[in-house]
Image 1 (cartoon, rainbow, N blue to C red):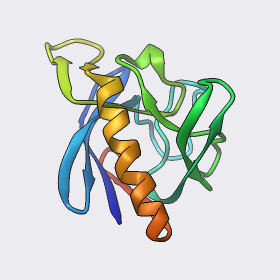
Image 2 (image 1 turned 90 degrees about the vertical axis):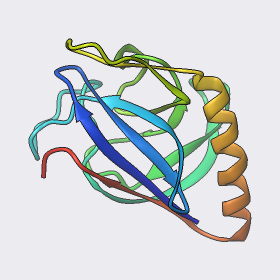
Image 3 (image 1 turned 90 degrees about the horizontal axis):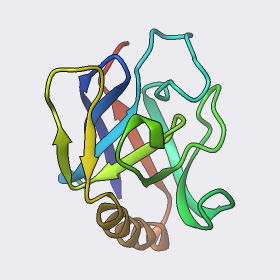
Length: 142
């Protein structure tokens, strides 16, 4: 299974991208602000571009099994989960089916996040049943 997160739009507070599974659009993603390499503001910085293994483990914070990115340099506990704005993420990846806020401004919003997460989880579980799953993150500052 080939997962790809492509960052498309950078705003002062967050980042919008697309999430593809095996080359097909699955949903939109919202992350924290992309910063220059080596710059990290705790809880307000998107993870570095790269390729990361994805596993599903119980989340104590969210009280459910969620995807976890393994080996993200300088970050711990990076998950894929539901949420709508930059206030819902602390370095994690939020998924949503629709873009609900694209007006010029400091941030974006996404919608139908819980539904998007449920669909992603079904596909990731199937992929993990067949073997290792990784996500490649591209775009933004390099």
